[in-house]
Image (cartoon, rainbow, N blue to C red; front, side):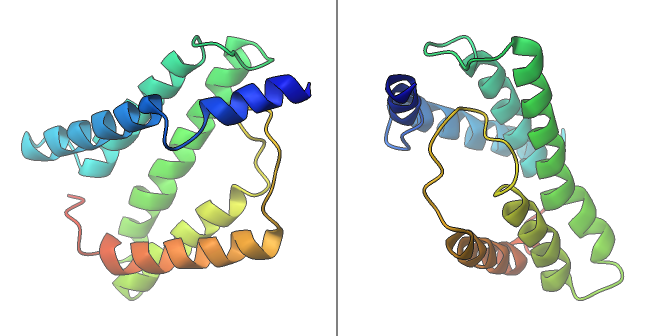
Length: 152
């Protein structure tokens, strides 16, 4: 089991070529969606991320569960990301201060990832208090930047 966890850790390194290609494709799709008025940046970004994750399942080492379970997990994350970073903040920004409307759902989304089952069987290295600090930082940044970005 330890060897497979090491393989997944290697596969998920942020410095890997696979991670870079995925991020570049996501940013390009987000810009393409925005430039051609197909939808907001976040929609294009997350759709390409979803496609990338579905392709990722088939690249060894494969997760120890079926594609149906993988698809369900990825689709759940996709839905949470779109709701937490786009739909809910847009709706909340009509009734509360815009930076707070973007920061609160982002905080809830990021903090909830601590309890979500990971896509891969990896070691959890961060303590809850560290995850809370990261969640606060990400939500503050998204609260400041999120309401400025064109999500129309």
